[in-house]
Structure formats: C-alpha cells, structure tokens
Length: 495
Image (cartoon, rainbow, N blue to C red; front, side, top):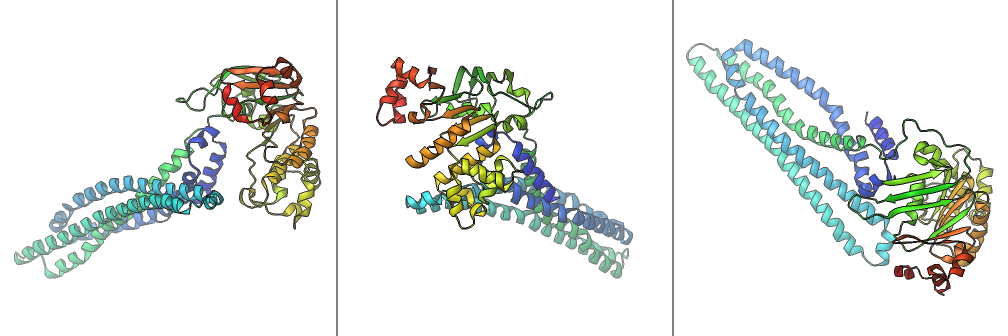
C-alpha cells in the first residue's frame, strides 16, 4: 500500500504545473514521498490489528467482569468516559503538534537540500559557518517541536495510568465493603481485580496508539493536499493531437503575470513568426523573453489573449503532442544522474546507439565524449556535475538534434561556451535551424545577426523589429546597443 501510494503521488507530481513548483519547495515534497508515507504505513500496518485485538479484549473483559459482579463493573464504567475524554482531548493536541513537527522536518530537508546543492558556492565563499548557523536554526526548530510531541505523549499515558489506579483502588474499597456485607466472596474479588487489567490495558494501549494515529493522519492530510491539487494546465476534453505542422507561431494580444499580486510580465503582446523562419528576441533581463518560450510550450497559460500554431489555439492540442513538436536548448541545462547516452536519449527514448552518436556528432559533442574512459556510458554525476558547463550544453544540443522537432527554442544556448566552442556549436545550430521555426533568446547581439527577424522587447512591449540590417539602418536602440563595444546587457536599463 505504501509503495502504491508513493508511486501514485510521484506520478501526480509529474503532472503538476510549473506554477505549483514555483511556490512549493522540493524538500517538502520529498518529505511527503518518504517520511509522511512511512508514518502512514506504520499506522496501516499496526493500527487495524491493535484496534481489533484490544477492542475484543475490552469487550471480553467487560462480559466477564459483569458476570462476576454487575455493581463493581458499573463503578468501573464510570471511569471509562473520563478516560476516553482524556484520550480524545490529548489526541487533538498531538495531531496539531505532529503536523507542525512534520512541517519542521520538511523545512530541515529543504535547508539541507538547498545548502548541499550549492556546496561549491558555499565553500568558494567560505560560508560554511553561515550555512551551519542557518541549518542549526531549522534543526533546533524541529527539535523544539519534537520535544513538544514527546511531552504531549506523556499526558494521555500518565493520565490514563492515574485513572486505572483509581479504578483498581475503587474496586478494592467497594469490593472490601461488599465482602463485609456478605454480597461478594474473596475469590470473586481477586478474580475481578485480575480482570481489571484486561479492561484498562486496551484503553492505555489506545493512548499509546494516539501518537502513531495522529502522526499518520497528519501525513495523510499532507498526502491528500498534494493528490487533490489539480494540475492547472491539462488537456481540454476535446483536445486533439498536433500532427504535421508547418510551424507558424502567432501571439494575439497576450498578457501574462506569474502571480495575481505581481505586475504583468507581458502586456498585450502580438507578433507572428512565419513557418521555417528564425526570430530572435532580445531585451533586458526580466522583460519576458523566456516567458514567451514557456507560454509556447504551454507550461503556463496566459491570462489574456491567444497563442496559435498554424492558426489554431495551442489549447486545442494535447499537451504531450504539443511539447513533442518543440525542442529546447536552454541556458540552465539539467542533466540527470546517469550515463551520457541516457541523457541524450531523453530527446527520443527509443533511439538506437547509432542515432545517439549521430546526434552528438551534429552537436560537436562526439569528440569530447569519445575521450572519456567509458565513452557514451560515462556517468555524468548528479546534475551533470562531472561535465563542464560547455559540455553540458552540447549534450542539451544533442538532445535537440535527436528529438528532431519542427519548432526549436534556443534560450541563451551558447552563453556558457568559449569563443572557439561557440563558433563550432553555432555551425551545428545553423544546421539544426534548417527548415524549422526557430526562436532565439539572446543578450549577445552578435549571436543573432543572421536571424530573419529580431524583436527588441522593452517595458512597453515590442520596441523595434526587423532584420539585423534593417534595424541598423534605423539607427535606433538596437543599432546603439550593437555598436556598443562591450555589448553589455546592462545597457538595456536605459529602455
């Protein structure tokens, strides 16, 4: 059951929208996959059998005690509601504190993942003390909440222990009086006292199980919170597969903001990219260039306007078919912990080794891969850490070659390469752009001179557009930026 729930949860996470991951930390989601489900599994494992066994024992002891002496049994049952009330009251407090405790351990996971993922930066800036101080603050918060859980656990157990001793004492006194009056034999009193444990033990066990129950229920609440979160971007009921496209892309009065309280990133943006052409977007950081690419792939939905491919709104197509027609080469390349071959094959899962090698050659990556001890079977390490940034970008380009999609997005695709490597990759990218609709995001204007159209974005939307020669002849902003020797992106702050 735990395994099924974990796989269901992970599968659901795969379909959650980018906007969900923008606001939820990975460490907390990892905690739900591991810690929460483990607590829930322990509850499912031991809970039912314990409740059944001790429930039957309580019923059996009640019948036997009633058969021995109904009056003494009635006296004992006066304590039962009090014991249940103590258990219920304490269980509610334990559940609240358990939820906070699990939240704190999730925060510890977040902090550890964040710091260890950036350990090279931490050590480079000699920031180990600050990292340890930050982690200690979260660890101490978890320690504090855990202490509260342990403290709360003592209340029901000690309270029930006290009440059970009162029950024993009450039976002893009432039984002694009954013996003096000749209404109860000494043998029956001894048997009654022995069976009291079979009545009180299930209630005491229930108090012990309260913590396990509340921790399991708190984990179940977090599990359900994720499972019941619907993906914001899904296929429409009448969505159709995207097939045999030419690749024309149009934005019609598109406005978009990431969160309701934030200003718009794009406002009433309209443009058209003819099929097979290369269009470059340039402008200051944060102006929405990468957002345009994310909207085309339907990772986000615009609040206003429409995005069209071949004249049809992209929301009419299934997500899988839409994204299968788009290949991306991004600045922030992510490689999975595995072999180079596996990472290139991400572009086409059923690709043969020959196809992988051919794609790597087109991306000018084959020569460095061949020099590695295990060639294409070399491990890249977590996040591709065993490869240089430039090598990781070439692996990403090889993925795009292998995917062979009609729409290509290049988001600062050569930003991490040195001059010689960039020159080699640019030749590969030129071949890749042939007969494809290509969108290039770039700050270095020298990399987009050969685009069919260059669109300069600013805070007011599209400031200029045209070919490289046309924009230079206008002697506008693009011309000024291009003629700046340093081509410094900070110049865009003048826009």
